[in-house]
Length: 300
Image 1 (cartoon, rainbow, N blue to C red):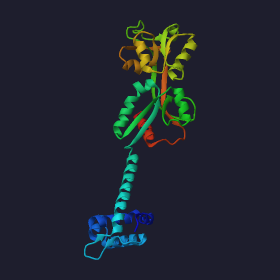
Image 2: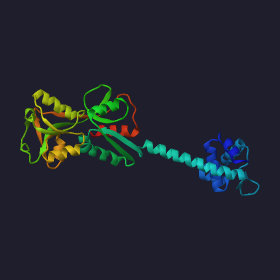
Image 3: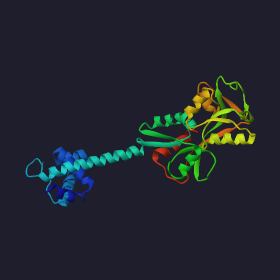
Image 4: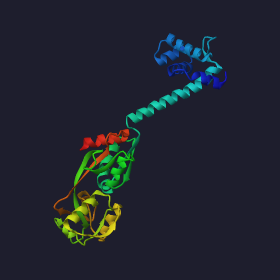
């Protein structure tokens, strides 16, 4: 029988009969095949006979005491083994996804939190799920919320308040401080009034970042107009400019604590920056991202 004819007839065969046939062929007999499958020999013989009937071919030569594959049986065995291996691989892949052994966590986060806060969270999560990888996109909170609402991303770090179309899991509440070089005249100050930022050279985030919005609001309320020497969303550049004395900036307290050569001075009155991990309300997200969201909730 031609190979394509056998393949066409095999399209309606159930996998269990193929598995039984392959076991008998590989073991060299019905008794050995039945033992390997933990089945009764009559049931194995019946299954093989039904397979032969459905295909319209004889798969085993039973003319002698030992069985042997016919030419059609040889053709089917190769295809059966390939099919059964594919099924096994598919089951393994599905099991890996179910156990979160593979996949990618994807999250968008402002650069300051991505630099000084996110690494500890990511390292803890990825240690528990060694088969996962992670992708972190840097963006400001305004852009992150827009991307979440457009379904461009599934998870993002943003503020704890805003549109009700987002579900928010509170992450941290950090004090906002003025960051200066350790040799700056303000470095030993215990606090600063916002009015003191008037005409002060500053290097700051571009618009669209929550911490920049907070600075702008404070300056409007205090009628202070800083001298904006540099605006950038590239955090390492801002940090380097502060250390070189080009200007001061505003950041989270953790930035001043973790960045050598920088001192952090609280503003008076104090300003706190609350941040949250957010997803669009009602959206089903990937298993990896949902697992990270659930894992973070347990850490807080």
